[in-house]
Image 1 (cartoon, rainbow, N blue to C red):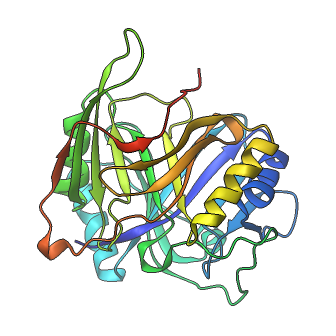
Image 2 (cartoon, rainbow, N blue to C red):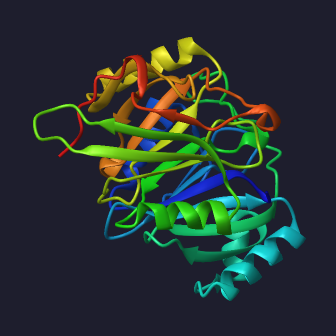
Length: 296
């Protein structure tokens, strides 16, 4: 496996001011953009983990995955081209904007925008939360995780991520959503070459923003609780109450962020030794909690 982690996410937004407030005053990240033309949220030694650029819609623009090195980067690009996927090589200025040596972009079978890069430049500026969050769990496990729509052919999208990209199975969740006439859904959880339980999941659900949710993991449970307080004080909509997931053990809550994009804020995520792991099958998502209130 040559994909190391989920390195960054890029969004387009109609309201940078809301993103800046949510990112710094609710989540507790640093905005290191330097001007008002974008929002660049830093949570560790990386230059940024979330970049928000102005656009005419609130949508995910790119999911950036880090490759193990240049050889693996080039091999994946060649593999995707041989499989018939359209590749766009990033320009030098775009690479500098992402603080990477090089990247290329493509689209997965469900229409999700992907970028693959290698050799990201570390930022010597220490992370210092503007509201006192101690730290986020990142390092070689990357940003956290994202859940994306799997499209009409979930199994075809799953095959792309496993057989072509080389991500590994973590869990296969089949569950009934709560509520009258609510559908049954399936979520395939996939891991990269790091200990995080999953860096990506694909779900049999649509999303107008292109992202079902993104997860940021905090080091300390009290920081999660304080973030929950800030969400309530800011009158942000909760998508799920505090709870603990079965498959990755994450203790978390979900909040609807800017542009209707949901975020999971949690701690205690499972870290796995993949040499001794059997992929699991789940029929319930939670040990307790996570009373869901899905936005319209």
